[in-house]
Image 1 (cartoon, rainbow, N blue to C red):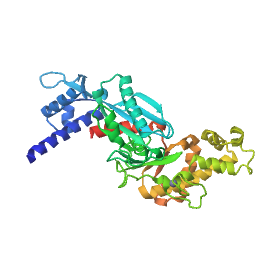
Image 2: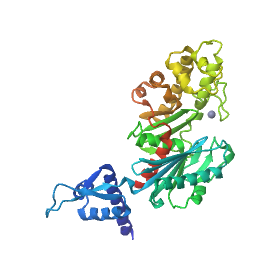
Image 3: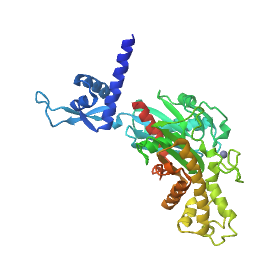
Image 4: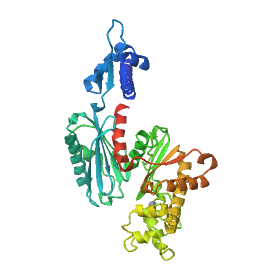
Length: 407
Ligand SMILES: [Zn+2]
């Protein structure tokens, strides 16, 4: 029995290896695969037959060189449309969803409004409806869906598919068995993954984004709330209680007067928030009455002022804007210096609102981190802006499904 089990495992390993070679090389012949995989041609032929039957591999044409007997060999190709993945994220006011092919090329995407304090069952209905709509819109057979992954703000138990707590939806209560609830609403029997959105955001940076193929990455979404995703030695890290990366509530300035959403003072999240950026500006209004910011805002009311306006003034060297943004940079640098010591990443990818502040912001931030970090570390840790924008979460979720499927 033991040997039979081993043979089965070996067969699976060989199959995955061949499929991954096909994903890596666009087009390849049996002879080339045989050399690269170190397997006999008949074994490879058998594996190819299996995957052609499943639609993951297609014959794309004939090779130019001739094999023994003068026959031109078949050239095989990975079929990017052999399966489809669905990624979704739930934010404070939106459900975003995409369907992609196996190369994470977007086939269709939709966005559905969510109410502030929308009930969990209503959100689940919208997830199920979006799932069906994406499949219908792309006119594919639902049997080709390889999985669904959903990113959520808040503490999420990835193993159990449970939302422990979501700060955006306190009315959901605690420990919601979200994955089971979604499973009941979706007729297809597919793997469903639930995780904190930051984990998919950092995964997107590694697979599609600015930190492509980097092994040790920390992503940091800051501005409104704060989330962080961590990849160490190519693995997404979650921690024993699945709270790894909740760095938003590291206390970095206990003497701060503003209260964080968690009830503490001086959390990283509040220190670098847009809310605090605006408060610094408001508090200094009497000292800088001529600041460009007040001319751009609605009678000096900053509540509805887009952060871009403040960044515009900052880049135009408006004194108050520079003072306020520099204050944020200062605390961001302190938080990042701590993160560097805890996780020792090669790359930190900054996501969210501050990207819109532009290159000068990034330059100042790097300088500040260098000043306060350990000398040996400061040279190596790169701090960069994300290039994925608001799609990083959904694309990361869709890619996560694909990678898991082929692993
Ligand atoms: Zn806090």
